[in-house]
Image (tube, rainbow, N blue to C red; front, side):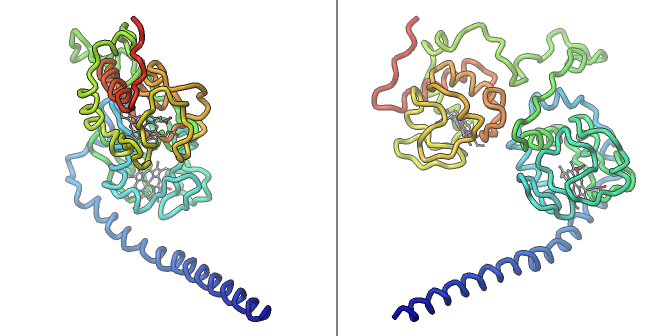
Amino acid sequence: MDSLELNKTVAAVLVAGIVFFLSGFIGTNLVRNLYPEKVAIAIETPQEAPAGGAPAAPETPIAVLLAKADPARGEAAVKKEGCVACHTFNDGGKNGIGPNLYGVVGEPIGKGKDFTFSNALASKGGNWTFDALNHWLTKPAAFAQGTKMTFVGVKNEQERADIIDYLRTLAKTPEPRPTPTAEELNPPKAAPATPPAGEKSAAAPAAAESIDTLLATADPAAGEAMVKKQGCNACHTFNQGGKNGIGPNLYGVVGEPIAQGKDFSFSTALKAHQGKWTYEELDKWLTKPASYAPGTRMTFVGMSNAKQRADVIAYLRSLSPNPEPLPAK
Ligand code: HEC
Ligand code: HEC
């Protein structure tokens, strides 16, 4: 009896071992063999590019573009542009045809990562600033003549900024976005009387009105529509007992402890905030998640419009059998 049990156990362990071995084999051989196909496709792209079309150097300052950038759009662009055929973006991800790109913002150019860089890139010197990345991604072959990155470049400046903003979020503590200078925002040649400073950037709200004041006239129905418009529902459910997605279910979040429970594994960045989701905390969080909790996993740029934030918070407040009282005036 005992030896029969033992045999079964040994057999089970052997089968598991074989399966493990085979999956490793398939992983390293088959998947690796797929790379050349993808390169063949990627290498074709330079020929498709119209010769005169793309500028070799960026035009609008990167700080201005980053103020309107969206890392989620950048993540989608990285797939669309085919960067994923050559690069991984996750922490500790393998090098492929190109190096793993986790944490690349601020790192030395063409160094480390156990990757053999071309001399062209390795001899550049300096770090990957936002500006350097902007030049590189505009036209790699112009930034580093002889680079191994056979990629024609990203023509659309806002798409480039979205990609750079996405790269920025790939860090435990993402670097803050650069603040555009007055001159960058308002270049001398086309000097409009009113620069689009405040409203376009998701930076600190200029509004003097506090969330308490705004909530008095906020509209939960407008908030619900805004939640769809902003794409919160791509990551969150809002119904009672709704499933977690990329983000936690948000039913009843107003008044709850920050980043706890819900069977969701929150980032340490958000968990570091103690206390509850008061209206003020929600307001700060939704203004700019990455500033409220640097390193948060909520890759959402934020909402710069205070009135719209108040509507969203009023909607969140309504998701409860007994909504929290509105702030006293
Ligand atoms: C055909 C494969 C390929 C594609 C497509 C590709 N890359 Fe690369 N990438 C490389 C290679 C190879 C290198 C190393 C270049 C060198 O050593 O000259 C590199 C280097 C880089 C670096 C510098 C890394 C460092 O640590 O210095 C960045 C940043 C980068 N790529 C971003 C991107 C982005 C963003 C895209 C898409 C818009 C992209 N790449 C598309 C192959 C590719
Ligand atoms: C790209 C996915 C994504 C989008 C879009 C997104 N979120 Fe999140 N959200 C998350 C993730 C992931 C977390 C957990 C963050 C962490 O642990 O750092 C989170 C956390 C939260 C929390 C804290 C929940 C708690 O229990 O502590 C609130 C509130 C929230 N999100 C509201 C919103 C609202 C409102 C929007 C739209 C304006 C939005 N989110 C858009 C992914 C997203």
